[in-house]
Length: 477
Image (cartoon, rainbow, N blue to C red; front, side, top):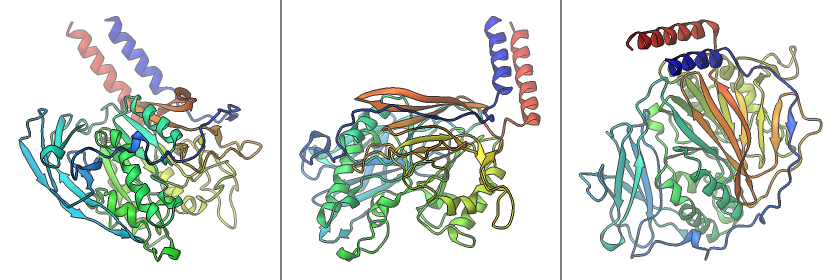
């Protein structure tokens, strides 16, 4: 009885408190002794090639459909095509099912990629652990993944958020700390390998090393991909002028399942979240495919089924760092009004190699002839969070604007990752974890209240439902 009463009081408290007040922001003065921003040498064990002839490597999975009942499993065989089959089942070592996909390869300058395999495994049961096997003979390798729970408004789920990772010792610290977090899926906000910092054949070589570097996570946990500027790889001095060539060959997305015309922008539903991935470096103004697609996708969001609306992009819309300041202004001018109208809960971005969180603010009242010129508090606006602090070789962006703008709640130039732990339809716990000299340190945290379910009418309806539920359970004792 006491436990039920506590639940009722707690629910009432959560539903009556929301994070809409703008207070003075905080700029952290923490300075860490970082490891050098240099890529780990290729002969390091984190890049080790699996044993066995033509053994699959660079294994990674991502969601393969709109609703979480499929995965795309990808890997590379270095020496010869081999098999594009996946054997899988619910018991380790016993594989009842087989799926077959396709193989591709590409050249970049004089680099010839390995044989890249992509296999769609669909028709899976929700909330089930699957074991899978790829490769043949003594070179075969085995992994596992867990499908998400069935979509529903009160389904708890924990996401990790990583951006601008690279392959330095700082990157390794971020990756290992994420793997200790208990999160189930990564929302990746762009800039993967930083292979474009190299030239000629080394570009492809560093894509391969990065694939092996992250495999200890990506082979088991889905990573939801978005592309950043370092994936563009426009290098005319090498006669390489096709944007995103390496990225698109290696990292597929389930764009067709949401009627997107490009793998660069797409949407998925997972547990209680509707996640929209946008491309900062693809056309997005009115009449373009991305613009038209987003307009339709936002209409499909059903907050009764997936109350949490999350947007991923690479370039931040709000940023008070001198690095990349106002680069996201053009996308803000096009899409911010939609984000506010549809009550997006949170927008995650990368690009700036530091951490920053905003208050709920918007700048939709301004146009070139009238209106307020500065962002103002807006209860319907998302929280904007920049997590471009994965650890890449370009180093930290340590120079913030002074004074701190009123829209900025917390900022710090350190490496780290974030987690978003959805509890139910009303609130989620958010944490940013700093990499402090090899240790994971929770540094910024708050309770994120759901935008849709925070309205008075829906809150009263939900309170009534919860009260009725609790009273029925009490009566049954």
